[in-house]
Length: 235
Length: 185
Image (cartoon, rainbow over all chains, first blue to last red; front, side, top):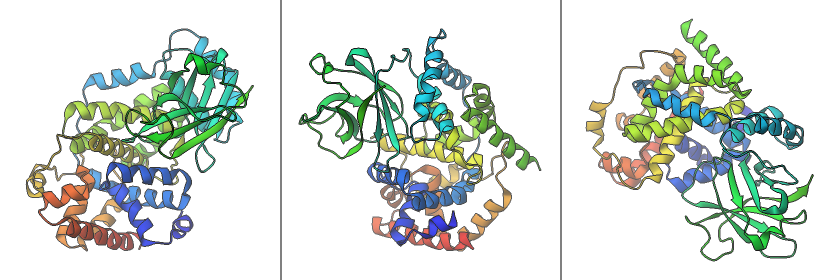
């Protein structure tokens, strides 16, 4: 950890980590820091250093028992949909998911977590994509319903909410990006594919996520940075 | 030691949460929710908002428990960091309703007594931090404490302490660098 941290050269980098933990940064700067945390180990170690050292300041905050309903709401959000089917699908899909680059334990927890948040049973996957972020780590996993009429987008890394929106794009081979709508950073989202595009959700197409103004790209094409992308693969 | 025992219980519970054990999440909630609700409430200053954020916090814990590394962080620090980050993000996303009284007033409202119960943070961490904060100028230390507890931006801190923005930035940045040297020793 100390070795990692020593790789940070500039005072400015060290300061950014401290400012982030202290909580003085604005929303845009916070997102910049969090993007960096995903791929920069030395920087992440510096943030951990500050979290651990400044953490005791929270001792000064009085504990306040939350209302009873808070736990009931959390428990409700975590309840698996009734019936055994989603669970079966989940376990069937695990060996496939393990082949991705995240640790299988993390992934298992993630997939269980992800599937408990949705009311629908996951579609039987024929086409899938792992949308990698700049570090090569998966940022999202996409699972396409048969016929390409919809897809489930599951976050594979914790991307904190941003002022900006995340927009999903379908990029058919040799074509420009087509918007599939907005997705959420913190929870799985089912995206309906417009009918005229469903036939183009094929194994040679790619998916990408870009950062856009709230409400989505004003131009119909990506205007902000692409934060994750990956090719669709047929199982 | 009681603090060590609760810490290792919490580490064990988080490991079970990482494996998908919902009962273990309830244990984590039972042992930490009052502390984290206090943290959210202090930053957001609104019970409903704090309650919503607290729900998000434990759903995040459910998803992210596998990324908790007991070799690198204490469990309560890890949980407090999630609660603070979620609260600060919520605060930044809200356009109105910011708490902007002067710091002197806020200091009176603040509860100076350490959390009476549950998870006693390793005592020497706290002592070390206190020693290092004492070496800063009083106003630097106050700005750093306020920033951490209330989640204020530089701009808000400058307004609350009635100094120019540049002055506030320089107090905190110099304070942080000095603090870093001291904490590393």
